[in-house]
Length: 243
Image 1 (tube, rainbow, N blue to C red):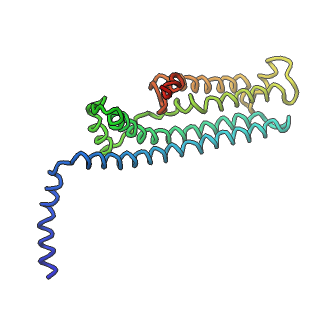
Image 2: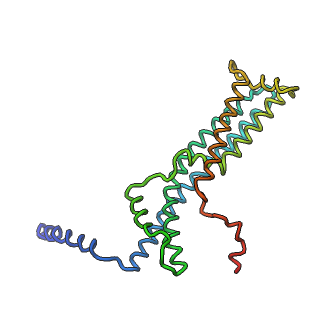
Image 3: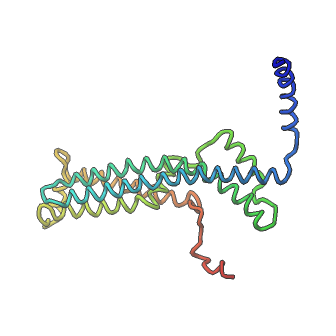
């Protein structure tokens, strides 16, 4: 008895599949599917956005610990602050990688919001971008990063890490100037910048080169997009919600 039933079910499955693929979606089915899809993509974007905060927190805590160690005694070497610079750079690399993944989901969420939700809210069912469904479908079929690693690093530098780097630089200059006693001239400060056999001018040149590269990345990141966050120009129209 079971074998004939299995045969009948096997014969009917292709026909059912074909019927489903050929059957057009109704308006309510389409909207319901888009709602669930949007919620899933938003959840993914939120998950990766939440992963950005721990690396920034690690960088801040590491910087604070290294500054405390470096200034706790005049005998402590200024190398601890340069080590903080290295560790913060590593955290920046971690966060840039995470930001690239976040941007994959965020780009889909924004595409749906701009071309599906905004027309529905305005009751003007014309999407600003006519091929947005093809874009989302292709990205689901073959996900790709929308940002290069360099662009992601520049964005995180511009909005977070540049201030941490500046704090380390200021602390390093203060350290070599006041410890073990206040320097009387720039030449003495330059001598204190030495690390073992590496002379002070070489160390200073390396630090300045690193900061020049970081500043260049941050500046170039500002021209990549008009906005990196979802909120754009909100401070320019605070009265718009009152009218």
